[in-house]
Length: 121
Image 1 (cartoon, rainbow, N blue to C red):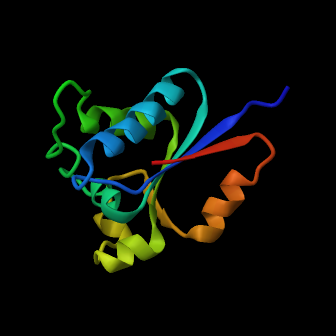
Image 2: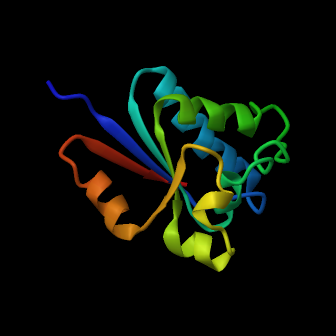
């Protein structure tokens, strides 16, 4: 049986910390469980693609966002939405090593694979 993958799109950042942290927590837990994960940073979460931004995020009784992001980057894919990056003047060279910028066509291609599950936070 082919392995399943999980595509997670997080739209919240510091503006909705619980929803944001839930997405990162699920992504990191899935990676730790051996699931192929693609985490998409859209909207306000796009800022977490920049160095130091995840370290600046805090939520009581939650794992540090920087640790969760590092876990996903170690074995998964992290993408900042093309348009979200452009609206925030974020360029590929600004991002944490290993994070890419890509658009809707790539997101659709990832979720349309036969074994992918998609979650949106």
